[in-house]
Image 1 (cartoon, rainbow, N blue to C red):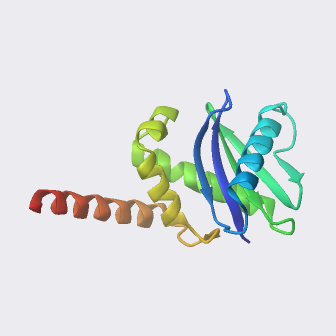
Image 2: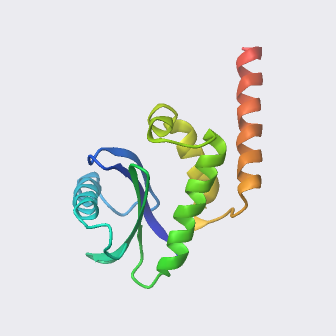
Length: 151
């Protein structure tokens, strides 16, 4: 199970977060993939399946409020597990921001990236415990405050 990338896209098509777990794509290929995948997902009806094939990988997505959480995975990966990874990310975001919304991700994107970095390493799920991720983030925040106070 390897997630190739994770995208957060608003209903208007604005990219809110991109995280790549593969380095074998050029910047041009990444930009084209983001554009194509986001347009494809945004153009789909709500009753349609949330798994589709694109080039040599699968796209799994889920909409939460005004954001689409999109993951690109290998063709042989389990779609349900990918949906659970997306859901776990949303749960941790919700717990961290106390009812997360799109503005939280826009104005606190560093924390959104920290959370995804705690959950996924190299595209693989590393920490499934919400409590463990939140505790790690709290410790990181405390360390930053201590360093800022001593500087």
